[in-house]
Amino acid sequence: MSLALDERWAPRFPKVGVLPGFGITMGFTITYLSLIVLIPLGVLVWRAAGLGLGGLWAVATTPRVLAALQTSFGLSALAVLANAFFGLVVAWVLTRYDFAGRRLLDAAVDLPFALPTAVAGIALAALYAPNGWLGALAAPYGLKIAFTPAGIFIALVFIGLPFVVRTVQPVLQDLDRELEEASATLGAGRWQTVWRVVLPALAPALLTGVALAFARAVGEYGSVIFIAGNIPFKSEIAPLLIVAQLEQFNYAGAAAIATIMLLVSFVILLAINLLQAASRRRFGDV
Amino acid sequence: MNITRRFLVGSAAALGLSSGSAATRAQTPAPVVLTNVSYDPTRELYRALNDDFAKAWLASTGQKVTIRTSHGGSGKQARSVIDGLEADVVTLALAGDIDAIARESGKLPADWQKRLPNNSAPYTSTIVFVVRKGNPKGIKDWPDLARPGIGVVTPNPKTSGGARWNYLAAWAFELDRTKGDETAARTFVQSIYRNVSVLDSGARGATTTFTQRGIGDVLIAWENDAFLALQEFGADKFDIVVLPFSILAEPPVALVDGVVDKRGTRKVAEAYLQYLFTPPAQKIIAANYYRPFKPEAATSEDLARFPKIRLVTVDQVFGGWAKAQPTHFDDGGVFDQIYRPGGPATR
Image (cartoon, rainbow over all chains, first blue to last red; front, side):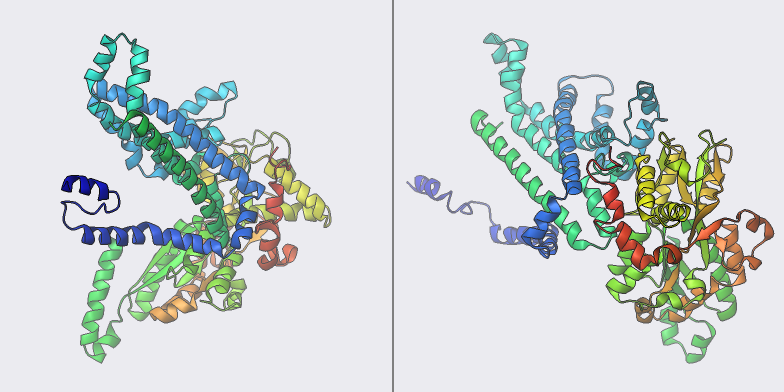
């Protein structure tokens, strides 16, 4: 009886539980989140609010800003797609096979996390410039990588990779092999097993990784700036426009572009979250 | 590390003094730290000047002075000062940035530029071209930059003070050639930017792109940075093109009254700025490839490096930075109009 009651009330009073200390930890959480996230973002929006909605719209629809937003979000999406596929492959290889140097390779995945982004940008620019090792290979075919949108794409793939690998890896590790064996005994082919058993189980984790990598890529400045070329309407990212506005002491303009980016990112992350929830409902938690 | 140690020693000395007698205080004044907020290519210059000034100041007053210099894009540096970075003195790439500090923060008076000799510019420089060894594309003068097929490297004038000088020099050249045709000047500058494939955010970044990444046929650069690049990356790889016509860049220096009065460093900070105009400092300035305000103080071999170029000033051609900045570089200004969708520079 009491159990049934508890269950009925649980959704409305989630704090009814056996764990003590809800009040103090919740208070701490709210204070901490406010100091670290909510207040800074509030100040940002407040700065931009000085322009009013009309002003914000005017900034957002400047052709130059539109082009930069398109570059930033478009290339981030492409980079994330690439990472979703190759990240999955990397995670698969690292968890499913045992080979010499696996641990080293595993550690190397984290390097983009650890490296200062400016260093990564300079290294990539040196490598992909027409006189760099890889750039020189592409140059005879008239392909330019560094200082074009392709360069931005490469930098974004670089910084995004660990997010996908590190979110997918533990789930893949915990995935019951018996599921795959069962699928095989029931007559599924290899691809059918991967497509209908393994991938659905990985989907929520993969989406989390994709969301993280995407959020990181959209805001990335340090590594991109060295390899982008930064030509308006071609290879100019939105964060650079924000910096340019700051250089002109136009704080409201900078905050306006930032707020627009924040809104777009929020909508996209929300969409990814909904997708994730849907896939969880469909395939259940793993 | 060094700064921390000095700071600790300084604090210890200060504590000792406050408990000591008035007599000791007169004998050994407490060490002082000055902050000089400067622009990108002055690293080597101020390293030399700071050492020399510290020695002279110690000898004449017995006070130990440490000068910390911070470097970066001129506009960014100005913004840090506006946002509260405690700079005793600012030594930036153009007067417009110090004007902005005066306007936005009120930490120094609007007429700051009149307080020191030579419009507060202890050194000047100009804009030159750096080309690949032997000048394979035959780049000799400004019109060569607008030729189709020439790769030009220059930083973004929105973020780099040096790039603004580059842009204005090109504009002034065409204005001079056509006897004041603004439309021609705009078309000319547009065709130059059509040849630009990388817009770095600062002068040093552009130098790296040209020298290390092998991008472009010509780098538009500060004269002092061009000499440094040659020294650093090899005179066997690059040549400097001496132009018949260029712009006189006057990077000014200023005392930040609001900061020195708060920190009690006015006396030493003023002495530091005045020192920059003295013969010993002028000699160091010339040795670091800047054009000295008093050439008579420099050695003749240093001076021999500065060819006679016809130089015009921003005041003569553009009516000063207060006019040039909004017309050309603010949002919607001429530079933004050059980069329009389907505009001439975007192809």
